[in-house]
Amino acid sequence: MIRSTALSLATLSLAGALAWSALADDPHAHHGHEQPAQATTQPASDVVKAYEAANAKMHADMSIPLTGDADVDFMRGMIPHHEGAVAMAEVALKYGKDPEVRKLAEEVIKAQAGEIAFMKEWLAKRGK
Image (cartoon, rainbow, N blue to C red; front, side):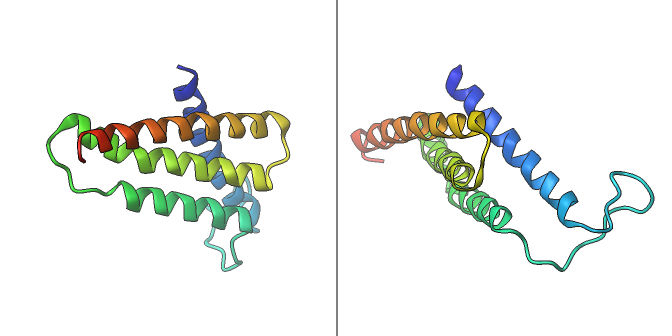
């Protein structure tokens, strides 16, 4: 329960950070008033680039050939999903300032690392 809550919070934090960053970086955005936000040609901040890279890697790595074995497919898909959560948490630790977010990021890294190890071991025992 705590692990899924931590992951859900990390995912929501990423979505909020990306949305806020898009608004904050766009000089044409007026918080929903007047014209819709225009695309900006300004380079993305290091934070946005880091989250985008983590997200792109996670989704690419989750695109696995499925076997039809629900257990194996779950484990193989969840490893990159958890690795993505770790990568996002690392971005939060590198750039974030809020102590609660940093604490959650540390907890996410610890929990996800343990689960990744378990899933890899589970697959190895079955020759997958």
